[in-house]
Image (cartoon, rainbow, N blue to C red; front, side):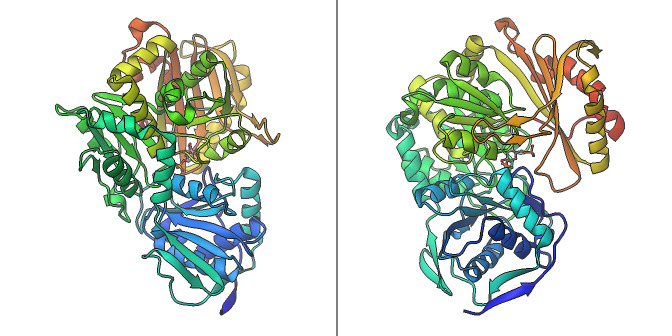
Length: 543
Ligand code: G16
């Protein structure tokens, strides 16, 4: 085996964000960029000598080339085995499952999630640890530290490994085991849910439409929904993963999954619609004429989870990211279980799940999951919904209306201002930070401020503290607005504004969310001056 030690030097901009390192594909393809980062991961986790790692990605442009580089670097660094999805494909939850099931030392997942793919779009890479979850902040800090003082990386020269066919291959002294990316994951889902009940629902005339958005979930959804559960052929659309996701954004929200939204609001709408993102960890749920917000979906799933076999004995606790609506908090209260509020980023749920303190977790950014893996899981959410509907035999809209009547409705919306110049975005956040302590007791655009703070998280399991996790303003009457900068963008800064208000009057629960939130939206602009300072008339994306 011809191991080469290639001299290199630190490259700026290799600090991982909310979920690994995401950059323009061309940046990742630049000289030494990928190699530096991969070597930094290996060094940051204490080397990979004798270790086994799962390797796979969402199939976006550069996926297979990057995997060949990673395999050669693993071999050069002494890894004993790489377990790779056929054709380089593995959804993020499937990779998390394999790490756990095979007891590996972790895995490398190649994805920029819901960001578009292609030579001029985005690419990403993250390391997940032996528990199957995204690396903790402590580990990512070590990886980043290495990127700043790296001097060389190791790689073997040689032919590409054939990852198009399953089976064991060798690369130097390392075994490359190429596996079917779907089989283990499908078996896990069958264990968690009542497949017979869902089959019964689907054979009773209940119709579904699942939009895989030309991304990695296509083969998983086809195998599970159509082949195992008997949904009609064609229920899964855009099912073939493509390197540029058919030219679209594989982001399951009403804007980017408009095709599905139109179908679900059309005259022949199926009973249930869903979509997933680039790497299969996000989900969107839509009923006939009824979009379900991620925060409401989390609350409904938590309230009804015991209808699925895996959760029959009840939930140990629930966790949500801080900007996610408090809808699920009242479910936890009713169930008499703890509800944890964590910073944005699935990695923060890991300790709670590992410690058995939470069973179900969720985020406003279209992510829900449970302790079955250590990632959010798009198809899992879809199957839990179907399992619940199979028992309840109610239209989605009715289920949601009943839920609101029982628990109240949290009107909720997120406004994103994308590609804002970074210095300006930081200044706007600093301005709010400076004035926030004087605000309680005063009025902003006619709303009385009750409290204002910057969210800081004390992990109850390992005691670590994560500061600067979002600016929060609470108004009299149950309203809240949160501001934070996204950690997943690749261009300038994205300012996220999360707006929420609790409504307990059943006769006022059917308003349009933007109208119901209008006074808080106005107060948010008065507080932040985003529109005034950026010269924009409104957000780029409203979810
Ligand atoms: C990632 C993280 C999520 C987070 C989301 C948005 O999701 O795993 O925990 O909520 O990014 O983060 P931000 O607001 O910082 O952009 P994904 O699906 O992109 O991996």
